[in-house]
Image (tube, rainbow, N blue to C red; front, side, top):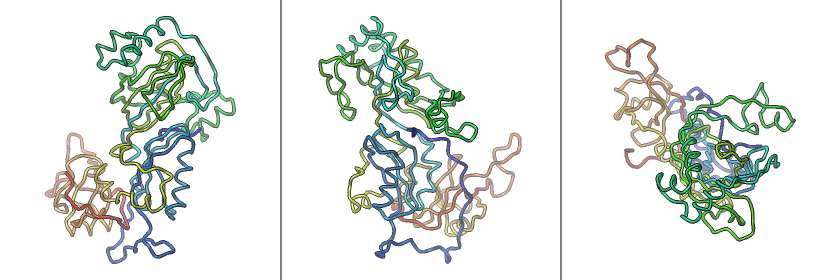
Length: 392
């Protein structure tokens, strides 16, 4: 089972500084063209795994260095952020950003994987009160606003409120989390009991987008369509914006528990991952030329996702050597703690860097004439684009 979220990113690799005169020329294809590089926002269809998508793009683009920032389950569709070439160094930072989804939760049926790809483990008729609340929501057209929702379906509203207040979530047993060196899903498939610890998460927003009391559900990629008349399980359609590490399959499980019925995730579409939205996505079956054209240059993609700092000429030289920097090495120094994209005066990505941590009680900065010092977290040995305008 491949998870639609990713494990916490590994610590940044050491910087890869190179002298300006020794910086390698851009990698080229067998035909002599520079190999593609940058960030590609793909609209993943239902069916293939994220690994399948990456393998297909590796062949289509003719590249070796390629990855993604946040896995999607085979049954899920939507935004998959694919990183090509030097952009793969952005993976730990882009993976850590918030995600936005539309999800459909079927009520009254539970599965072992908590989604539609699993085996059914429980079924239960819906209680009369839940039928009534779903009917009220259908009649009202999924009322907007907390007061209207609470008036039409008070227990469903309370269940959604409980999920909005969530600060810790237990991952599904069928997940890629390692337990004693083995993937949790492998242990679960082998019939072993898996006890995973709850993890810190945040629900930025959670809204009801639709309700179905019965009748055939509309296609998974056509949310909002009216159901047919023949009976199938009832469902809620939700829109949510969540932090890294949040499992939408666990949402289905926990929402069902609040309502007193088994439940599972029957459809999932990621509509945004950090700064990258589905409106920017290219279909997976687009040709190689269209895929190349859709690549966002490294500098542009990095600057849209992380804070930006601008180096002086000397600061860029020192950063490429992996040296510690001071404010005097920046024409526009980092304004926030944490990782930032460092650009040279021409707008090329030189490094990802951050202020050095000062382990002095009560001190915010080192007591030096030049103020705080900054370290390279990850160096870039080649660039694929220039940020034309100053980032704001």
